Length: 64
Image (cartoon, rainbow, N blue to C red):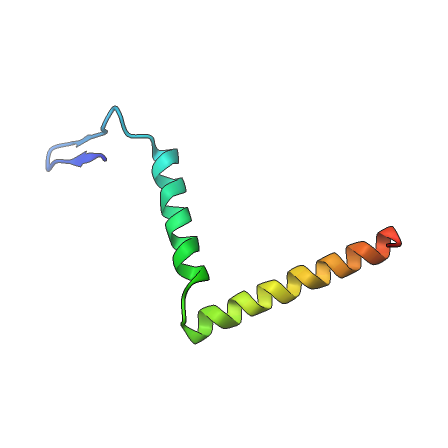
């Protein structure tokens, strides 16, 4: 984790921003997928429907 000082910003040589970003994204995804919030449920349902529609269209284009 970077150390923020009044006179300068000093990065932690052992920290990898990509690892931290991935961990944060995974955490947000888990929280979103298990949220009981009505808006989060609506967004998930819309995403699920869009995914199913895309699969259906793909199947029709492939003739399966």
